[in-house]
Length: 383
Ligand code: ADP
Ligand code: MG
Image 1: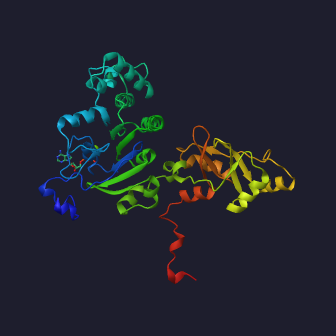
Image 2: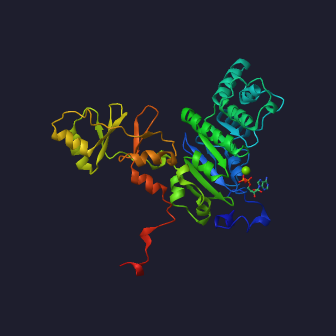
Image 3: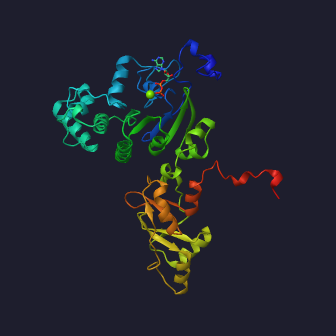
């Protein structure tokens, strides 16, 4: 332990045993998807096993909802595992002689919940993952993708706050895998669980994760948002990892949105619009109603004309503005942004304005920071 703390690598100490996870400290916020990413053997599965208490750490603490699970007795640990944590595994781990419904209800059965209640909850969970009506089937009658949905339904039926997913989608075909990722993101919007998701796939990590911890040889070498990792990789190892990532397909509207410089109320007039634009040195402003729902955009030229023609209201001056949901990837915003000077508005499912993506932000988000770095012209060639 002393040598590891002084920075010794796993390899240097391997004659004394395998240091599977070394000095890994991190916090996961309620409601976030925290991704642990790293090559095979980097320590991901061991790390997740310490989180549910199956593998106690040699040193250090693991707090789940404020309780240190390394300091409680086995009975308390079992109860936390049963009530608060569910797991989804790479190879589904379904019980072959039980029906899909019985598998989905398994955690509830262990908890001693009566049959009618657990069947109802299991059916609900199966419907959530698109398997309504399959409760009577057996696992071998389903495809791989469907089996993984059962694994997910089993975790959802348990209604735990914390979900641990170890390479849950890694065994699936690419198309099914993408479908499952979409479904997880959709479910998460509704359920707001706290999820620790393990993957060795960077594109998956970036699609799913609010934050990503990158592991190498047992250590966490970087812990940051998608954007931080793309723009500021902590070392060459991470830089190599992200080299082939298509930024337009992993960065989302949420990652690059900016707060609007100012907002116009729908009831305001061209004079106020013009003044606000000058104050904030901008040539366009978003218009929102009282519930902050986006009505459109007013451009400076229109506001000026409104003032010149003595208009009192914004009527006829508000133009449509392209909108997007926060989870949309940038690749899907390029056309809209190219066609509208004011950029793209990011709105929630009720149409409320969350932020804007000015065109220039979109362009700079797409630029790879490691290439074309114009700021670092060597001194001898500067004029
Ligand atoms: P990952 O999930 O990232 O592939 P693991 O956590 O499974 O990595 O493994 C991390 C390292 O610890 C690997 O080198 C693996 O061989 C080793 N390891 C895992 N479990 C054990 C064990 N029970 N005994 C000895 N070594 C182990
Ligand atoms: Mg593993």
